[in-house]
Image (cartoon, rainbow, N blue to C red):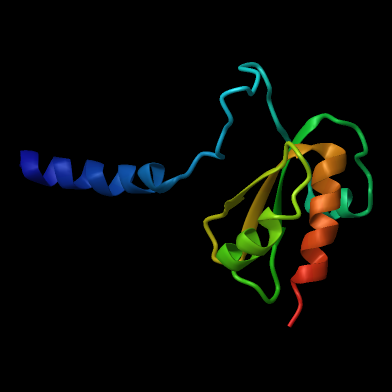
Length: 112
């Protein structure tokens, strides 16, 4: 009976253990909080402040791993990327203006 309960708990906790946290730098402020903003709004230039934002970008042609590798060299300062749960999803976090520039660069490289 105990083994069955343990198995159920492990199955329920597996998705939580698989989640990855955005990488952080040691010099990040402990109180900084990123607010989720739709990537379409950022691509249109709707957010130009330096407020910390987090967005999810759906990729059309590249995998998230490939897009992340290609984008790393072109990321503005303070912007971090992470692969989403889906193989075609990239998470981008940083100052609003810099994230907006990153989305535009990602659109340029996400082609066949």
